[in-house]
Amino acid sequence: MIIRRATDEDNEQLCAIMADAEMGETINIAFERSPDYFAGAAVQAENVAVYVLVLDDVIQGLFSVGKRKVFLNGEIKSIRYLCDLRLRRGIRGGMYLARMYKYTKNELVEAGEIMQTLILEDNKQATKILTSKRSYLPHYHESCRYVTHILRGNNRKVKRSSRVAVSADIPKMQAFYEAQAVNYQFAPVMRFSEIETSAHFRDLSLADFRMLEENGEIVAMAAVWNQGEFKRTRIVSYVRWLKRLRVLINPFLSIPLPREGELLGTHYLFCFYVQNNDPEIAKTMIDNALQSLPQGEVLLAGIDEIDPINQVLMQYKGRREYGKHYVVCYNEAVAVEGITKFEVARI
Image (tube, rainbow, N blue to C red; front, side):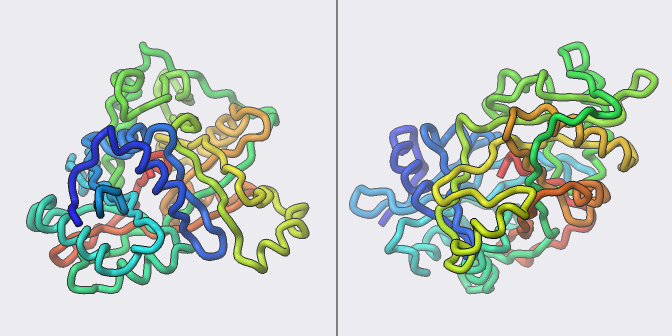
């Protein structure tokens, strides 16, 4: 058994492992990455670092520990995002997991280095194992409860239309973003001038950004990012009781539960900031985003449960999924205070 850095030649096997590794108990889902695993990895991290576990020349597992720049305690830091931890069926025992984490500790991270990760609350087995404080595992310190809102698009008229961004807006978009993001923990560092050239912003353009302005100054900004060409979430199966009830309860749900095998939406609310967290302005931006969606599509908006804007999102009919965002460290995990800004589009 060896662990090595993944290469482009590994792509087909990586896509197969991602498609086959479902997670969750009530609703089993799989995060698919075909046809190009590395396209999604480049969106997750500016500096991609994907590793594979190989047995008898066959890849049996993978994990990603790439870095991206974020604001942490008001400063710019390059932080690893620990994600895509997957093992093939049949080798999901502790020995292989231990080897992957020991390799990360001994070969990849520096002493005292912190990472971030997100675990879905319904993925109870992963939560139980990874937060068990076993000797080979790092410390997991919960920083926030993370809510993903799944909202249906609509064609209703909005009280106030947002404006589509153009290249001449980049300087003031950059200034507005930095003034807002520095107040959050783990908010990604953005370089708006790179949006249409960097793989970190694949399939995102300036035209996907919309702004509200007052007296020529931006007061709110958000983008709707369609990632359907390189990242999909598939409903694999439901727990038995929910499988039986799905057809009966769907007529009463604002977002019906898809059939097994169907895909969830691929449009993400990204880079959503509102000056002074004004609830009316926030609602206007959300309404504009929902109106911009293609017919029948849904919008995924992720947010810290204690973020004031979450109270605005809770006013919309939809479905909510919950997870936990963790600070991870092989030394004693450092508590991070404040509101976490973790982009659902970069999970």
